[in-house]
Image 1: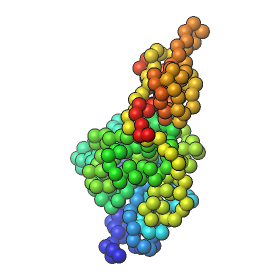
Image 2: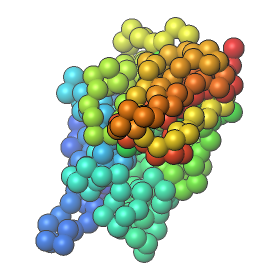
Image 3: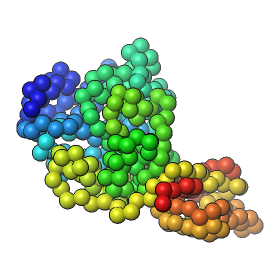
Image 4: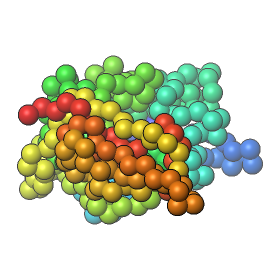
Length: 318
């Protein structure tokens, strides 16, 4: 048993206690303070510390809804250990429904940050210094950018055994090998010795209950696996584990109509979609170049030549 105090943002949270905290981010040009809400639930018994977070990109609202549902249903109350919930990390982007911070930077590309850097960098530094050292495991909830819609999938470095095991436990239909991106939150946490998985589902600025349910159930699966709860697991029986993937891109500009379902497996030369002009004189078909699984589709009505249309598997674990 550990008697070491659990102190976060200057407040001690004792065993069996709940705390609602606020992390000061900055002041707006109006001099109003902007703060990030942090909900901490600590069990009476010792155990791991799990961080559940959404809204690293402010317009990816499915992640916010997942963490919100976990809190609303009191799933964040563990039998053992501590659960920290941050529903909205990039509160600037969430307020404006944009991906970036007000300084135009992607928060997920400036970690670990700097105390004297840009606004986004200063915030990343504060998170890295005050929150990250306290956690053991992290689930970072995301959605597809722009009009790109992700079928539920978990991403991480498959060479990391602890991460790979958590990815399988989460129970998403797809697990995608994805090395850490330079200066990302995941890279910083991994270097600090934390085990991190990234959940991708749906698209930005759109709430999808199918995606949200997968995220909530996945978090419960992880908590049960870590001994923090005793819920019955709900998982994909045979997740598709993708070692290598690629984007099929638009060969022409025009109106785009996808003709296959997201999450489906297709064979070579399957008709995936059509690109047409407004005048009825031009129609180009997009075919599958090989047998593959589709786990992201661009839902934009208009595309330009070279735009990413379908994210597909190239090599999978059999």
